[in-house]
Image 1: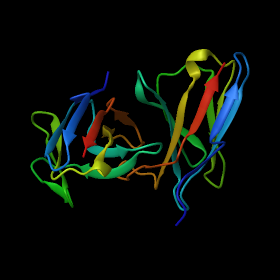
Image 2 (image 1 turned 45 degrees about the horizontal axis):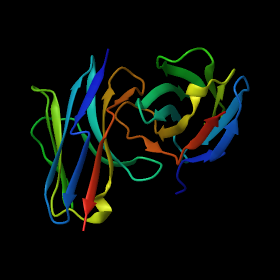
Image 3 (image 1 turned 90 degrees about the vertical axis):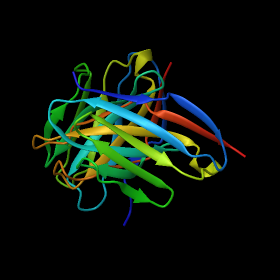
Length: 113
Length: 112
């Protein structure tokens, strides 16, 4: 069974631009969660999507948004990029209930110049 | 606010040593505690703990949860250089959705 895939793996943008990251979950998984990982803050929860609906959201500004498609693939968008948005963005998929384990993708390394 | 605290922040040991990593938590609606190993990019799942006092074991790794004192430990015996990684502790909440709060991790370096 293929794992969680994320594209692109690396991205360089400049301040003020916007970016879209993509995540394809494990086949059969309906929940996709997004995390931001930085050296200082560790892994921070952004949001979770389940069956095309945002089910839960962390404490990030509205510049961070996402969506999920009917095939469970998810995209995350960051608008008006700031230097502090430079981070590793990880997505994780699970079957969907709170009892399920999340499996992580390799991440997208975003650098904002 | 939910909080997960890991200690120590980093650790250097020699091959063959035994290490104990600590994780304490404060969350509103606890469902389970998770341990992950992160070597380069994606964290890989190690254990899920939901009940107090029941040890989970996988090879040289083991973990146990104390829901009364709100902490967990991860033990690694006979450490190897391949155990070098960041070990992440996370707490999963109940409530009909996935919400996982991570600690900042313990960086373990095993030297030959």
